[in-house]
Amino acid sequence: MRPDFLKDFTLTWAGECSAWECDELGHMNMRHYVHKVDEARKSLIIRLGLMTAYHHGTVSSVRVRDFHVKYQGEARPGTPLRIDSALLELGDATAKLCHVMTHRDGKIAATMVETVEHIYLPDDRIFPWPKRVRDAAKQFTADLPAPAKARNVDAAHVHIGPSVTDLEKAGVSIIGAGVFGKSELDVTERVTMGSLFGRTTSTIAWFKEGWPEFEDPDYHAGGKSAALLEMRAVMHRYPARGHAYVYAPALVNANAYTREFVHNILDPVTGESWVSMQASGCKFDLTARKLMKATDEDLAMLERGMVKGLMA
Image 1 (cartoon, rainbow, N blue to C red):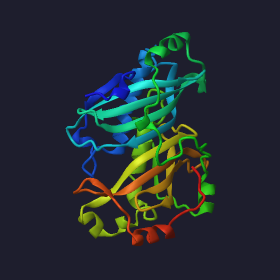
Image 2 (image 1 turned 45 degrees about the vertical axis):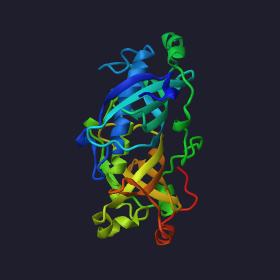
Image 3 (image 1 turned 120 degrees about the vertical axis):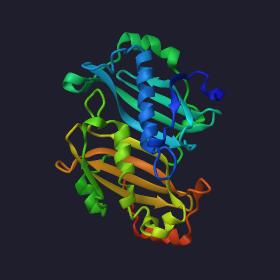
């Protein structure tokens, strides 16, 4: 069943949630939602007339600058999923796209809104869309559906991309580090958005200021964990294979239902930001499969680790 608001959208991907894509929470890990949207984006761009944008050896392609996702319904192993996509706006050399991932019954699994750039690879510059893309645009254009609008993050906020020095001055700790590998790249030879989400989710268990509950072994033993509800990521520089990174998250706000974070992935050599992220998460009951409210004791613990005034 396809929701009525998708009538002007185009099917760009269909498949399922595989068991290997799921994490300890029993549902598809956030990185794999983004990886599937990567295919949907390519599918839409090809339909718009850039047939060789993702071929080996291409000199021009499309990359993501700004990516917003809302996780709205769990995907468990074996769940059939589809993605419908549309063009929201076409600029001179940029475009805003929307992707809606749904279950077989039409219920939304996730929505994604992203800004992409048409990029000339030999000298890494954005350049105008060709006429054939502008001619095809109307066929694939739709309005932003209400379910895809930002809820807990500011979609209009201009990210500054704080440096390592900025974060250290604010009292933010580096809790993760690594080096990007070949499997994390796309045809542009740059790290994909899904891989950046993956580096975040793989390190979050060390984030004791944001999730002090993780320090208590009884919390996990009791079938409790955490879930990401929404995230907006903005690229400042594009890491490639062999680039090192450090990961520095900060809790910036909390209430009984959600916790608001700023995640930062940075170059440890230059101290500059690769990507900054606004995020919203919640406590999650793995047995009931639903959000848990924070207690007054939880909020008091969170207040002690909160970084005030920090912007992404």
